[in-house]
Length: 181
Image 1 (cartoon, rainbow, N blue to C red):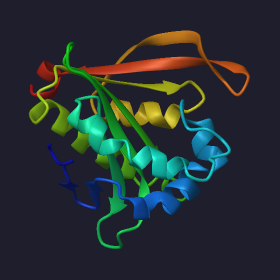
Image 2: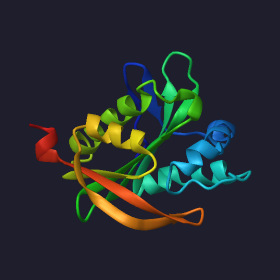
Image 3: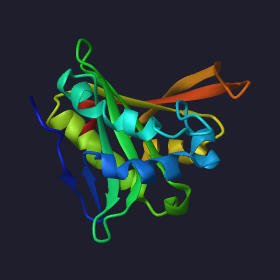
Image 4: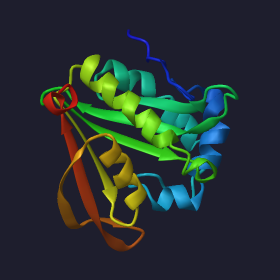
């Protein structure tokens, strides 16, 4: 069984979640702001959900399904958010996903974490393609994707239904050959 990686960055550490992180996950992900700007985080965020989610990470990683890591402030060790790569090994691609607690937005943390995750995807996981998508109402997420060098690939109109409303999804992608140029 492989262990989840830890990536040390300039201001952050991307590390495996542990059950002690559950209260912080519930607090940060339970914020309506985080839930409304992401596709899969529910609101309200019920007791026990964070623990259940964290318990899936090692198995998902070892089965080649996904890599989920905590975004942690390097010096002060507090949880800022989460970053993940959902993988499809048959197609050698991964979907990048992330969320940052409202208190920590606009500090470049998401971009710093996403850069490291994309690097890991191409150099360690040997993926050919990394893509990401965001709800149209969250253009800040698109700016992160652009900073990573991802290319705009299209808009899927009313592709998802979030809280009773149809939402457009915007797609970005990056190929290994573009990344390693």
